[in-house]
Image (tube, rainbow, N blue to C red; front, side):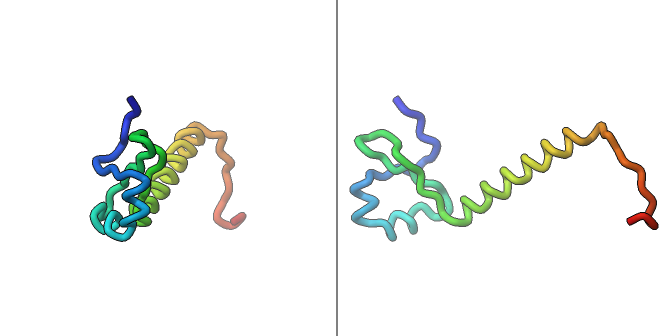
Length: 81
Protein backbone atom coordinates (compact mmCIF):
# COMPACT_ATOMS: atom_id res chain seq x y z
CA UNK A 1 0.00 0.00 0.00
CA UNK A 2 1.23 3.50 -0.84
CA UNK A 3 1.79 6.11 1.86
CA UNK A 4 -0.38 9.19 1.53
CA UNK A 5 1.17 12.36 2.94
CA UNK A 6 -1.99 14.36 3.62
CA UNK A 7 -5.29 14.05 5.44
CA UNK A 8 -7.49 14.83 2.44
CA UNK A 9 -7.86 12.63 -0.62
CA UNK A 10 -10.05 12.82 -3.71
CA UNK A 11 -10.32 10.76 -6.84
CA UNK A 12 -9.43 12.12 -10.25
CA UNK A 13 -13.13 11.91 -11.12
CA UNK A 14 -14.15 13.95 -8.04
CA UNK A 15 -11.51 16.54 -8.87
CA UNK A 16 -12.84 16.91 -12.42
CA UNK A 17 -16.43 17.29 -11.18
CA UNK A 18 -15.83 19.68 -8.30
CA UNK A 19 -12.45 21.39 -8.58
CA UNK A 20 -13.52 24.69 -6.98
CA UNK A 21 -15.31 22.93 -4.11
CA UNK A 22 -12.31 20.73 -3.36
CA UNK A 23 -9.96 23.72 -3.34
CA UNK A 24 -12.30 25.52 -0.94
CA UNK A 25 -12.66 22.47 1.29
CA UNK A 26 -8.90 21.89 1.38
CA UNK A 27 -8.38 25.40 2.76
CA UNK A 28 -4.58 25.66 3.01
CA UNK A 29 -3.75 21.94 3.07
CA UNK A 30 -2.49 19.61 0.33
CA UNK A 31 -4.87 17.16 -1.31
CA UNK A 32 -3.83 13.71 -2.55
CA UNK A 33 -5.31 12.96 -5.96
CA UNK A 34 -6.03 9.24 -6.28
CA UNK A 35 -6.14 7.26 -9.50
CA UNK A 36 -7.48 3.73 -8.96
CA UNK A 37 -7.11 4.30 -5.20
CA UNK A 38 -3.40 5.05 -5.45
CA UNK A 39 -1.83 8.50 -5.01
CA UNK A 40 -1.19 9.94 -8.46
CA UNK A 41 -0.47 13.57 -7.57
CA UNK A 42 -0.74 16.18 -4.84
CA UNK A 43 -2.66 19.41 -5.25
CA UNK A 44 -1.10 22.23 -3.22
CA UNK A 45 -2.64 25.63 -2.59
CA UNK A 46 -0.34 28.41 -3.82
CA UNK A 47 0.43 29.67 -0.29
CA UNK A 48 1.40 26.17 0.84
CA UNK A 49 3.66 25.68 -2.19
CA UNK A 50 5.32 29.06 -1.61
CA UNK A 51 6.03 28.13 2.04
CA UNK A 52 7.58 24.85 0.90
CA UNK A 53 9.85 26.65 -1.57
CA UNK A 54 10.89 29.19 1.08
CA UNK A 55 11.66 26.36 3.50
CA UNK A 56 13.77 24.53 0.90
CA UNK A 57 15.70 27.73 0.18
CA UNK A 58 16.32 28.15 3.92
CA UNK A 59 17.63 24.58 4.12
CA UNK A 60 19.96 25.19 1.17
CA UNK A 61 21.24 28.41 2.79
CA UNK A 62 21.85 26.59 6.09
CA UNK A 63 23.82 23.88 4.31
CA UNK A 64 25.93 26.49 2.52
CA UNK A 65 26.63 28.33 5.80
CA UNK A 66 27.72 25.08 7.44
CA UNK A 67 30.00 24.21 4.51
CA UNK A 68 31.66 27.63 4.66
CA UNK A 69 31.82 27.97 8.47
CA UNK A 70 35.44 26.82 8.75
CA UNK A 71 36.86 28.92 5.93
CA UNK A 72 38.97 29.56 4.07
CA UNK A 73 38.51 33.24 4.80
CA UNK A 74 39.85 36.25 2.91
CA UNK A 75 40.78 39.28 4.98
CA UNK A 76 39.77 42.65 3.54
CA UNK A 77 39.52 46.13 4.94
CA UNK A 78 36.53 48.43 4.62
CA UNK A 79 38.58 50.68 2.36
CA UNK A 80 39.11 47.80 -0.08
CA UNK A 81 35.38 47.27 -0.41
